[in-house]
Length: 193
Image (cartoon, rainbow, N blue to C red):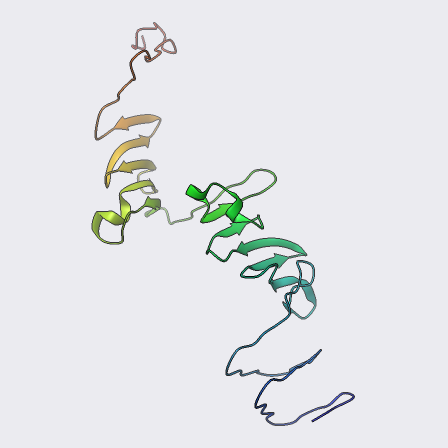
C-alpha cells in the first residue's frame, strides 16, 4: 500500500511485518504486539512526547541509556548498569560506593521523605532482605515522638529528641589525645549553674 498524501482508514489496519510510519497521527488506541522502536530523540526534542509539549518526554541520549526531559532540560537519566541520576546526565561519574541514585543540582539540593504525623520516615542500610538484615543500619524519624533514631547492628544507638542527645546502646568513646570541651557551660566544668 503506497499513499502519497493524507489517508483516513476507518476500521482496523493490520500490518504483518515492519511498518515505517513517518509523521502519523493516530486518533484512538494503538495496540502493538511486538516491539516498537523510535528514533533516539534529544533533550529538546524527545522521541516520545505529548502533543503541544514537544520538549518534554523520553529520549535515548546514548546506547543503553534512557532519559527524561522536562522543558527541554534533561532531568532524569538511567544508565545501562541501572544507576539513576536526578539532575545529572551521568550518575556513573560519582563515587562508586554511592552512585546507584544520585541527586544533583546547581544550588541547594535535598531529598524529602514525607510521612504522616503518627508514622516514621526511614533510610535503611541492608545487607539482605530477611529479618534484621533488612535494617542493619538506619536513620529513622519517628513523627509521633518527634525523635530521630540512628541505628547500627539493627538496634537504636543514638536518639535525638527535644535538644537532647541520648546514647541508648553503647558508650561515648573519645580517642586518645582528644577530649570533650565543656567551656560552653556557665562554669566550664560541665555543670550549668
